[in-house]
Amino acid sequence: MNKRAIDSIRDQILEALTQGRAPWQKGWKPGRGVLQPLNGKTGRQYTGWANIVSLFFSAELNAYSSPRWVTFKQAKEAGVCVKKGEKGTHVEFWKSYIPKKAKEQIESDEDEKGRKRLACKVYTVFNEDQLDGPLADAPEAETVSRNIQFVLDMAKAAGVKLAFGGGDQAYYRPGLDMVRSPNLDQYVSEEEAIATLCHEFIHWTGGKARLDRDTSCYATEELVAEAGAWLLAVELGLPFTPQNSVNYLANWASKTKDAEKALDKALSDAQKAARYLADAAKQAGLLDEAPEALPVAA
Image (cartoon, rainbow, N blue to C red; front, side):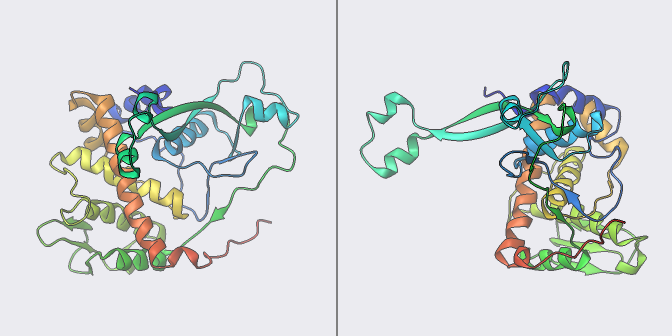
């Protein structure tokens, strides 16, 4: 089995879930703007659920303030060093390849496609706060902020059947294949409305006409919905307030036969769900529009 970036922190995540706390709960306050983790040399943002969870979880545990990460070699090339005793965080890079023996048997492009394999390479990176000096000319992290109208437009682009009113609960009803929500003015804040709706939209992606996800385990599906909403918030710049039930997550972690496998599957499903909605927004041209401007800090 390929080594994964999340391997080094999986036990910590499982422990947090067993205690009824998701890794994205601690310290996450509702607010506008998300600083996305990026490579301090290339400026490229890290993608993939394993990298996002690994970097955010590490930053939270160690109270890192910088969104920039570099390898040991990149730090040295930038004229700085990793502080003595500092431990790195793992990120992964997937690449397709064709085994040497298979190359000799390829006769067509279609044959080549069928013989491709995926390999995962894990790198160790260090946060800028772990270095003995700042990164000179380091790329700035993009601060993105979008509001409730963007979320509603995204849902419409994806084809979500959304109804407001008729109660004080938000939920996805599989039988009617629809999401129902309280009126927007019933939410205590716009941030709460965004977090709740994204959670329900992630549930909606599991429908048979879309990702056809196994939703038979309620606790696991709750994890998918919460993690998916969080990943969506990170990627699209949405404020996020955890809505999950402590009991559901604790129940999920304690009753799963193979916790490691189930965690990987749930987070993988969360990424697919978040990607489904983000792709709908992209195809509708919503990501081409300038996001809401952020106030300049005094």
